[in-house]
Length: 169
Image 1 (cartoon, one colour):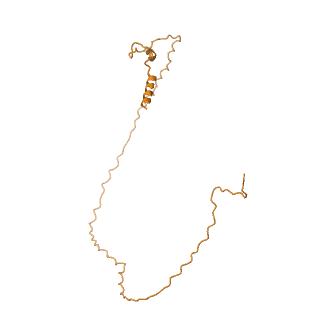
Image 2 (cartoon, rainbow, N blue to C red):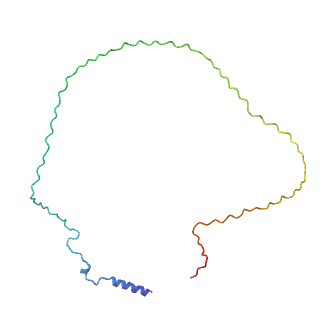
């Protein structure tokens, strides 16, 4: 088993070994000489000459006219006459009424009589001992009555109807 594993590993190593190939075939990248320090690309600045004439200058609207205002109206004089009403006379007050003394006496409300009656006195107990011996016959057990069986109910779903005669192939 160990020999089989060793042979498999050697076979895989021989299949993956590329040391016998020339180095030029393995490295396919191009040499530029400056490695990662490459020069910045330059975009050429070229002004192309046009054969079309330049667009005409824009035409602007004429200035807005200045509004003319009407002269201010002549001042109007208004005379206001104010009449002051006659002073109201000072009110005359009535003298305060004489103090009245009233005495109120409160009497406590009477307690209502109870509306329930006291329980009646218990009746006197009389104890009498009587011994009676009675022999009774046991009651007969009734005969059980059963209901008739219910009629069979058809079950829902598909039912296969058996053919009248036996079918043979």
